[in-house]
Image (cartoon, rainbow, N blue to C red; front, side):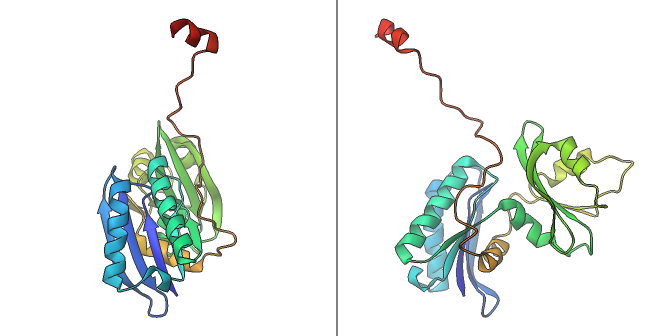
Length: 231
């Protein structure tokens, strides 16, 4: 199976092509960036596909991160994945950024639970906790940093995600200390590809996974009477 993986959810613009038969990435590229995903993504995908020496119709499916993350970045990646899937006649599947972070850490620290966390700003994080075998312990949620730490009642955790260091710095000194802290700005694109290969297209659609409403809200319009008075 050939999988094109795309990630623009956080502070990277990345794509990779995975060949599951050989268990190898045929091509990959990742650029760290906080802004500019819309301009960078399609040229980056074109370079990856050229390096893999593949036409889009040779792909079996397209995998994309669907959140939590930057609302703008998510729209860029999901729109690209849907458009390419439609043009190639292939399914698009969506994977959460939390699961992508966790996948890379599952089993690395033995049976230690994995707490993946993404900065949600305003002293909050998006987080999820899975056991050392990958089974879910705490479903994806958004909570204050202290609440996320309190939810980790399953032993000393392996912290991953762009908020891993934030949690580690606030971790209570009198409790079991994290066994590892992996603070990456974005998930490893190879794990997004592998999760995409295992996903069921019928149950993992490529649509945004939001745990809270956008911070930016449209400005309230004046009442019609007030608009008429100032026109």
